[in-house]
Image (cartoon, rainbow, N blue to C red; front, side, top):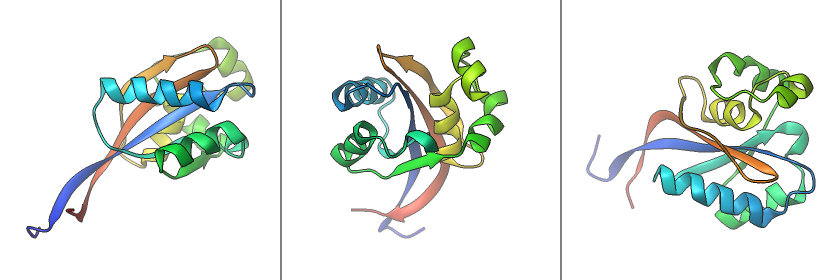
Length: 138
């Protein structure tokens, strides 16, 4: 590795939210999550069927990060790795926590959950750390 390169870690915020949740509420929740785990945010991830919602798109734009829509199949594939369980979400989505599953799936193979789901009235957020990658240092 050269002097102009740095090792960084991919931190993905997984987001679950109700349709009526405002962007400000989601943004505040992500801020609280990152205050607990001070890593640089690489992207947001949410269920693919919610990725076109204006609130989550506004949050991604405000934070200047890409938004990953995670398929239902990929969320369910992460279920054994989530640590928080919601009976309602399990019944409707087949996974214990959309936020945790989205974070893990979005961060890629070998990702580690570093912050289990935290919640506000209408949203949930979890953080996952992906494999290290080499990037150009500023």
